[in-house]
Image (cartoon, rainbow over all chains, first blue to last red; front, side):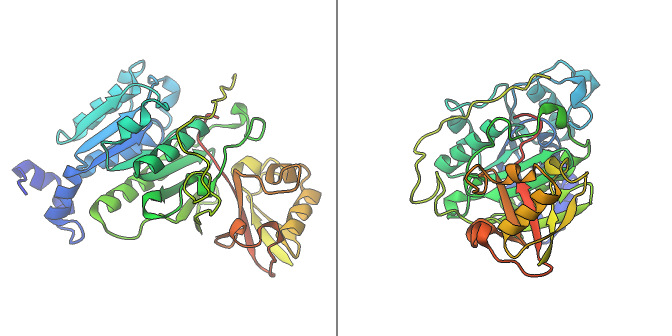
Amino acid sequence: MNFTEEQIERYSRHIILPEVGGIGQQKLLDAKVFCLGAGGLGSPALMYLAAAGVGTLGVADGDVVDMSNLQRQIIHNMDTIGVAKVESARRTIENMNPDIRVNIYNKRLTVDNIQEIIREYDIILDGSDNFPTRFLMNDACFFEKKTLISGSMFRFDGQVTTFKSQDGLPCYRCLYPEPPPEGMVPSCQEAGVLGALPGVVGVLQATEAIKEILGIGDSLAGYLMIYDALSMSFKKVKVRKDPECPICSENATIKELSMYEERVCAL
Amino acid sequence: MAVSVRIPTPLRKFTDGKGEVEASGNTVTEVVDNLEANFPGIKEKLCDESGKLRKFLNIYLNDEDIRFMDSLDTELRDGDSLALIPAIAGGRF
């Protein structure tokens, strides 16, 4: 370990924790985490990972910052409205912690680019906002044998879990085999999200990632954490490996990546 | 059997905004039918035309997914807690 004086001061609250220490801090600095999305979930997740000293952060997003994002996407600000979200995220991270190397991917992830992009990272966070991307990321993580920390939200509800299909544990399709068909999901007019909700969900994802890197505590793998902001309650339920899972079971039918069609809702 | 059922945000339009409702039934199927009687329209969100559970929504009995028990035939005891948990994905679909 070769910490600078500044690093010893910056990470002192980690270094004095017996469960982290200098060795753990070095693990964090050596770790590579990829975050899909620099939106509601990616904002707090990336900021806490950067603050904690996770040395390499990758972030993919094809959108630009819009005024309507600022109600919850705290990595962006008034000065970056109109700027690519990944560029805006990089500026915030670099202002927070110069130790962090930020790789930005100013694009949507597709069947053609996702495996190559996630291959160089240790842990993947999903903070995407649509089902086709969520299933694509699950399938890509299965084929690339990557740990996937999944966060999702809708209105006042949040869900967080960790998938480690490479260790024989369940994947996203074990939990939800297929995305909802058209007409079975609430319309965009019914959507919306409470501003502080993604903070809770994204920070839980960051916490899982940091524990995973340090090798401490209990993983959410095999469990789903459900957060209900209105009743202010958490519920943890079991996630079982589905013996009929279309991708990770012995009876798998999915042998290569494909992507569900994304439905764009007209507002 | 009297059980409690947790209703997720997207389905609360059927329950007058209530996040938890009481229902009765000896099996999950009977509880679903009882919910439909009290909150018309909700069953279609849980089950497909053939009556099978939809693939993007799970029903938990306490902390266990009923797909890994006896699915909709799972028997219930007085005071059990059911939770309806749909896949959610953020603002876009």
